[in-house]
Length: 114
Length: 115
Image (tube, rainbow over all chains, first blue to last red; front, side, top):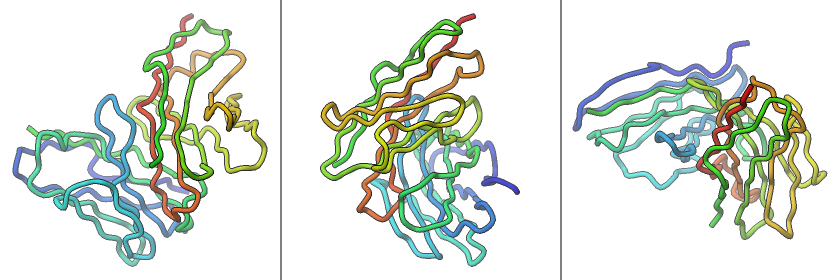
């Protein structure tokens, strides 16, 4: 079975632009979480979605938004990009809503903001 | 609020030597604790997790960790390092009552294995 897939794998944007990152969860997984990993740091929680509804939000500005589709795939949108948004964006899926188990991570989308 | 501290951003060991990666946590409620590994240009993979069953947790690839409540620690060990263990390791804590996958990750420890 395919794991979590993310696209694009790499992208370069300039300050002020907008970006959309995509994630397809493992088949049968209904929850998707997004994490930001800045170089040299651990991942930071951005959002969790379950059954198309937001279940959790981290300490990120409103420039960050996400949604989940009926097929459980998800998009992360970041508007008005700043240099500090440069990071690896990780998507993780889980079969259930409640946070007691393993997060299954994709390989990430590496965003560079110039 | 929960937090995780990983002592040592870089650790070097010789092949065959003991691996010890340190993790201390802070949590006002009983935590769930995890160790993840990240190989270059890859996502994170779960090594092991503590969810209040046995305090000594065995994971994949010969790794294990012991939950010590009195020391608020969850250190990761492996008796004998292999070259393939070279990677970055992250400790994470979760609030078991939050109902979400808002895990708090440490800053990571990069393990180097010397031949």
